[in-house]
Length: 252
Image (cartoon, rainbow, N blue to C red; front, side, top):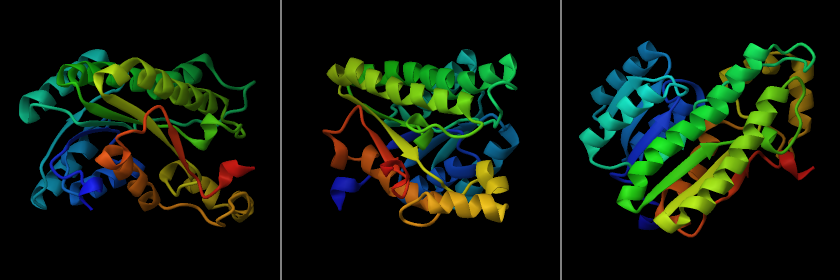
């Protein structure tokens, strides 16, 4: 349906060279989007760029630390110079450390907050300025079930994702007058490198699955439809919302 089309829309995706972010990038490319991706690991982002260009997709890429404002500015200037516009920003870059609260160091706390919260804010601010000029744009933040539920050994992560959810609401409130929509996706238990160690333990894996009404871990592909919906005209009156894609995990 044309209503859900994202063909030729310009997407900026952070953390787009690995994990769930890479799955977003591949899905968006197949749906006809024009892409600008970044990742802190420049070797990985260059590999993704080369691979997608060989497949005939339109993409530019750079190594960017989402906590470094100068690097973000330079990247976004490059995107605007190449594409003349930015239609959708996907704030996907994130970090997770499992620590007991009494054992977490100040440096570990700061790392989680800097990447997950500050990085989301900085990219939103810098891209938001371009969208204000355009009088149009969509920002999609990646929250988590940890935005709403306490998870063991993840105080820093839970706190950061709760902040991302409220940052989403507040930016939607502030920027609605500029025709900028800001929403978030909150994944549940999705198979990824971040939880590979948990899934490798049968007792932990079975316990986690038992907490999900649909009875399974999600696949990265399960998030793509929600991303496309929030990026398209199908959701043009949706803003300030967090959509939980969690197999029902947060229903109880």
